[in-house]
Image (cartoon, rainbow, N blue to C red; front, side, top):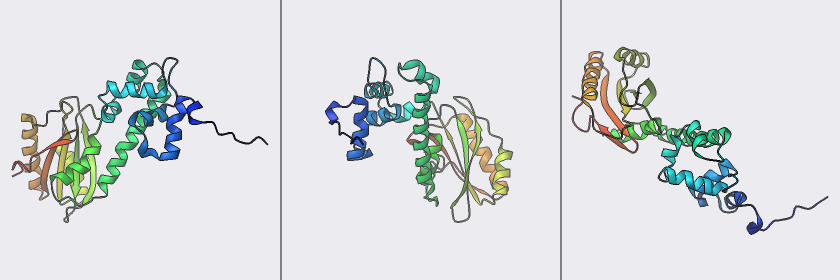
Length: 233
């Protein structure tokens, strides 16, 4: 039987180096480009997997969040050496990261302040290119019962049917609710439509004795809180 022969690291293909580093030093020792290189496994005729990964990061300002927003078609069209399978692998890895962040946030069940609500909501909106509207349902101890996606809109707006929100809150026996939507434009300030909608939500939920605690506008790592600004009265 042939014995396995150890090939020196310097003699191995460049595509193998991140995997060796991963095994010897752990995942935390790898750069973003090296981790992406492990996902895509190989580059093209003109560049290695690491070169290709580095170029993708450069094109996205070094941001994994921006890279996660790219579609399969965009990645395939832009990068020689990235086919549909590799593009799906990259996007799937970004989605797993987002869901992991959400699970970690959900472990903190009790909502005390706007920052607590943001920490739970933020992973829901990560990498979203269009507006989405969500509602958090809480019990009498301000513990999260559930989080519901209500609507998906366009780049600048989303339509909300308040009757659907009321029905969900009643069915879940919620005693209070928190609303959130994102601004893909990056402008954290509420629009006139946001202000009008918030007033309608306050009136509707107060009428059925469910407390509307806050409405958050989320832009990546920042947020605007109607409650913090004294606008949930």
